[in-house]
Length: 117
Image (cartoon, rainbow, N blue to C red; front, top):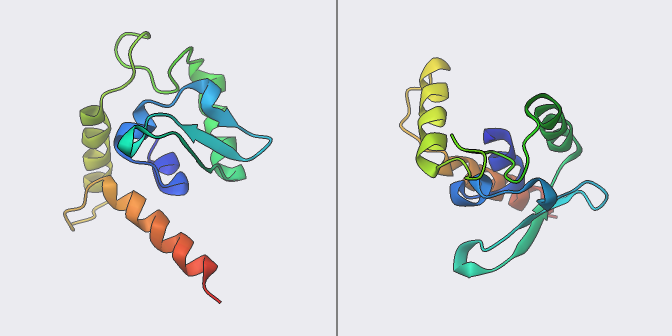
């Protein structure tokens, strides 16, 4: 989930609301429905991200939501994702206080650097 957040520049609320049907491997994009401003948009889906998501799908077999919550008819909560990120940050020994939203900013910075002449 964190990898998708970083590699596709998603907000936490967008990643938890992804549906399996939002992935478009042919176009290498994913559809973000009702993102900020209640607008739909497409964003990048790298081949590495696709491979990781495909392995996840093969193992966990999600139905409607790519990341289901405790009940399969509901998506994972934003707070759950934030907790997982915080635990991963601590396990990695990263002392700087950062949130999962920093991954979105990293994506934007990476994208800006790659488009400069």
